[in-house]
Image (cartoon, rainbow, N blue to C red; front, side):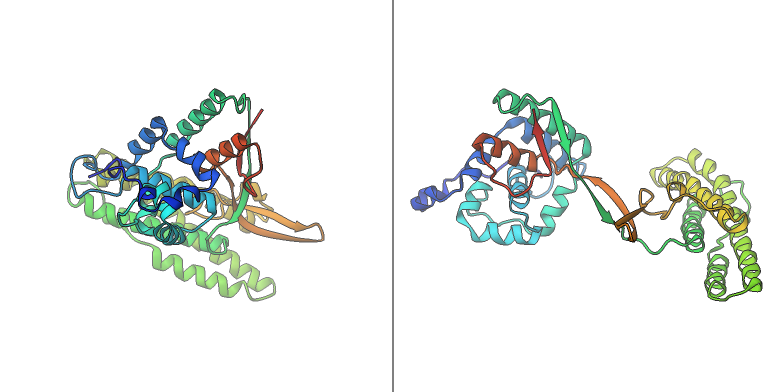
Length: 351
């Protein structure tokens, strides 16, 4: 059952000297985080973790504690484990996070709660914070500067043969699930659910071995192996296109989910087939912007970085760093104090 907050308790009343040790930044944030609009927006997302989070189950970590611990984590640049450790050790942070004398939630609990905050909520939070800054006459909020960064994608090296094999393997698994869901009720032949993973793997390994060889004969063998692998991939795509509409007509959330996965996967594999035919069979040079380098991280791109003489190509994703409301609150506190409290700000409001 989702809880709003613990019963108020003044830890400083037990140790009066600590009341003078809270940082000015924490004091300002403590006042800003009492905003009820922010609290209700975050609570609405946390309530969606389970269907009956608001009414059933044992009492959860309070929404207020989760929000404030996430602010502390972002403010000091700690990991989730470090946040748990330092909040538990500090009476000042216990008071700020409104944990009081209660057990501090562990790092895995914080991760699960943080993952429930939705992108739409972040947009509402950002709009609310801009209005808050304008009401405090800190800024007119006419411009927004957003920083971005490039991070490496956690994928295997994307050769055409491995991408085709990935597509056949994953789609074969989806077709296996569809076979169990449809059972005897569908008017489909056994060939519609046939799994070609072993054939695709055999051709992929043959391509990898042949690619190490030199000469015209090796090049001809390579093209023949790619042709056979492409034929396997095309057969699997045809099967998915045949099974997908039948799944969509079948009632039930599981059937709908598998049909949706097939619908998303088919265009990606078709793109891999096209780029393989252009590069291997037709000898074209496919631009990096037109290549798909991963079926599991489709937004990854080939990005060149480094010095002009020594370029370094990496498979990366470009993220806009908009770390929820946490850094925005820190930025507002900085503006209110009229000094550079933080060494960096990924997102700032400017006039």
